[in-house]
Length: 268
Image 1 (cartoon, rainbow, N blue to C red):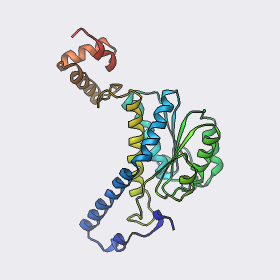
Image 2: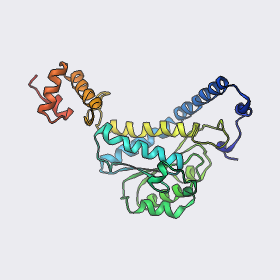
Image 3: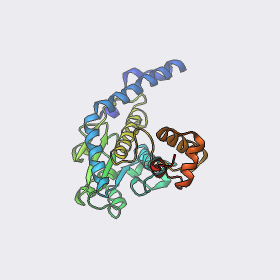
């Protein structure tokens, strides 16, 4: 039986627990997800290097998943442009069943290998990286997408919580997060989903750092699209240039609110 389908002995009688006991148990089990990601650091680093190398050569990153896995991929992809100032087509999220499935579950979407092929084949080019996300590791939709990516000369990465799964065996790089049995049997939106989110955070963020989208630990490409981000952009310039907020705002105004241009100005 798949690890993600096994019953967790710690939660066998969760329906009899007090609220406090239930919350404490779930909180403690979340540490398992964090440890699983730490244990997968070596394979995550391989994936980061592959993604960064692809981006340096004008390649792109695609996340593919169904259900929770697909939603997490779309989430991470959608947050890269505002955070790192990259084009919207650099990091892409594809979810089985289309974007309607972001808000309305359609669990049968993961069963179509053919749709996985169709949804990605016209979007890829050689040199891209495709990350397939499937906690159980058997989603046919994801396998169809990854097989297509391989045929087209892309690097494939599998993120799964079952090491003997078809996804783990087919991907060029396998990121195995050993989250084990869930608190609610088979509900992989819990620990497995938490581990997936952590992995995707690392993949995109580390790749952006390696491709020059971060200065020290500052979001040098951040776009001031709202009041909060405008204030953050000013703070970043203050930090780098050692000026007050008024002067930072002046430099940004003179540079079209581009942080890189503002910090490169010598007229302080």
